[in-house]
Amino acid sequence: MSVATGKGLCARALRETYRAFRANKTSWIGLTVFLGISGLAILAPWIAPHDPIEQHIERRLESSSSTYLLGTDTFGRDVLSRLLWGARISLIIGTLSILLAMVVGGGLGILAGYKGRKIDLLIMRVMDVLLSFPILIMGLLIVAVLGPSMVNLVMAIALTVIPKFARIARGPTVALKEREFIEACRAMGSSDLRVMGIHILPNVLGEVLVMASLWTATAVRIEASLAFIGLGVRPPAPTWGSMIRDGFENILDAPWLSIYPGLCVLALVFSLNLLGDGLRDAADPKLRDG
Amino acid sequence: MGTFWGLGSQDIWHMLLYTVRRLLSAVPTLLAVLTAIFIIIRIVPGDPAIAILGSSASAVAIEALRERLGLNEPLYMQYVGFLLGALRGDLGLSLVSGKPVWEHLRNVLPYTIDLTIASIIIGVVLGIPLGIVSALHRNSYADYVTRVMSLLGLSFPAFFTAILLILAFSIGLGWFPVISEGDLKDPLDRLHNLALPALSLGLLMVAYVTRATRSSMLEVLGEDYIRTARAKGLPERVIILYHALRNALIPIITVIGLYLGILVGNSVLTEIVFSRPGLGKLIVGALEERDYNTLQGLMVVYAFFIIITNLITDLTYGLSDPRVKYQ
Image (cartoon, rainbow over the protein chains, first blue to last red):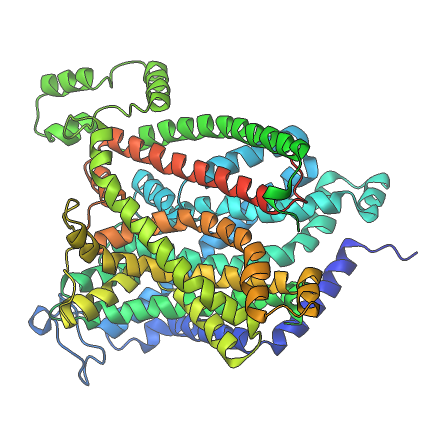
C-alpha cells in the first residue's frame, strides 16, 4: 500500500531542499561566515590576545598598534579580545533563545492545530496578546521585570518569538490533521502524543527550521539592542551591544570603538539572514526555480 | 482579479459584515492585552513610592504617597479603575511628575509620528521602484545586487545605522545636528532635525518594501491577464504600472502594515542615538524611574497601535483579493 507517511513526506522534502540549497551560492556564503564567527567564538579563550576585562587605564583609547590590534577602549581594555569574547554572548543568547522559542512555540502551535477548538482558541489568543507589542518593547519590559542576566535575556527574547513559531507550526498541522495517514494512525490506536511527535512534527519541522535561522538573526539583533539600551548582560562582561554603547559615548575621540562591534553584529546578522533566505527559497517549491 | 469598485451590493454587504466581525474579534484581544499590561507592570520590581521619594524617605511619607497614588487600594479595584480609564483614554497620572500620562504622551507623540511617517515615505519611494526593477529583471545582475543589498539593509541594527549616519553627516560633514530635537513649530527646523533619524529607519523600510514589492510583482507578472495585456500589444509601461503594480500594491501595503511594529520598536533605538524626544525615550525614562503609570500608558498606546494596524492590514488584505470571502 502506498500511503504517504509523515516520515516519507519529510525525507523527500528534505532531499529536495538540500539539493536546492546546494545550488544557492549566497546561502553558502552565509553559512561559511556564520560558521567562521562561531569558530572564532569557540576559540576565544585560546586566540584572544588579552584578557577581555583586564584594565590598563594608562593605555585608554589607543588606536590600533601591534600590541592592541584593534585598539583599546575607555578602560584600556583590548577591543579585539572583547569582540572575540562578545561573539560568545551574542551566539549563546541568540541560539538558546530561538531553540527555546522553537521548542515551546512549535509545540504549542502543533498542539493548538491538532487539538483544535477550545485549546486552539486559548493558545492562539495568548499568542495574539504577545504579538500585540513590538518585539523590542516586549523584550525591554521583560528584561526590566526579570533583571538583566544571560538566562533572563534568553527567556525574554524567547517569549517575544514564541508566538511566531506557534503560528508557523499551527498552519500545516491543521492541514495535515485531515490527511489519510494521520487518520489511519489514529484508527490503529496511536496516542495523540505519538501522532503529533512522529507524524506531524517531521512535516512541520522544515518550515520551523527555516524560520529559526531567520529569527536567530533577529534574536542577535535584539540582544545587541537591549545591551545598547543598557539592559544586556551586566558589565564588565563584553557584549557587542554594550561595546557600541560605550563607543558611542566616545564617538568624537574614538569612532572605531562603536564601528568594530557594530560591524560584528552586522556580519553575524547578515550571515544568518543569507542562510535563512537561501533555506527558505530552497524549501519553497514555488521559489525553487527562480 | 476583480477590484473593490467592481463589487456588487451583496459583496459590499458581506464586506461590511466581515469588517464588523473583525472589529468585534479585536475586542477580546484588546481586553486580554490590557489585562496582560496590568499584570506585567505590577511585577516590575521596586516600590514606586520609594522610587519617587528615595530610600531615605520616612515610612509615613512613603505610606502617604502610596495612598495618594492609589497603590493601597485592593488589586481588583486598581484593575477595574485601569480598564475603565484606558477605555476612556484616561491613562492616569505620572508617578514622577504628577501630571496626566496622556499629557506626556501628547508632547512626544508628534516626534514619533513624524519619524514613522517619514521612514515609511522613504521606504515606499525607494523600495517600490527598486522592487519593480528587481522583479522585471529577475535573476539578472541588477536583481542579484538589489536582493543582497536589501538583505544587508534589514540586517543593520537600527542604532548602528544611526551612529554611522551621525559620523558621516553630523560629525564629518556637519550638515545635520547631532542632537535631533527640533522645534515643532518651525517646519524647516523640524525637517532638518528629522532627516537623519528618518533616513536611519527609512533604509530599514526600503529593504522590507523592496523585498515585498519584488515577490509581489513576480507573482502578478506570472498571471494570465498580464499575458493577455501583452498579447493585446499594450505598451510595457502601461502593463507594468497600470495592470501589474496596481494589483501588486495591496499585498505590499499589507507587508508595510506588518513591519510597522518593527519600525515603531526600532524607533526607540533611533530616538536614543539622536537624543530625540519620542515614545522610545519616554519608555526608557519611565523604566529607569519606575514610573508604572507612564509605562502602563505607553504599553496601552503601543498595543492599540499594533492591534489597529493589524485590523487595517487584515481588512486591506480582504479588499485586495476577492478570493478572501467576506463570510
